[in-house]
Length: 54
Image (cartoon, helix red, strand yellow):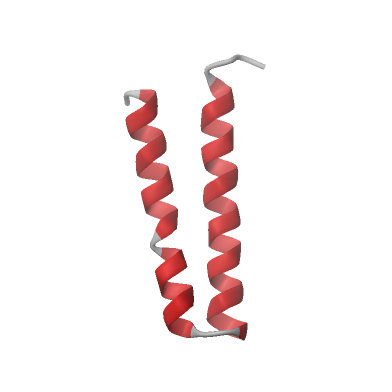
């Protein structure tokens, strides 16, 4: 595994976990909370792009 790939994989895992959490909140807790957490996904992926310099 290349050291440069580790942060990208961590960001992708974090975005995926955030997505699953938002779907869970949307269907089982509160739709507003699900939307709020759902906004985290593109934010995490944007941060990954900024950190990697692409």
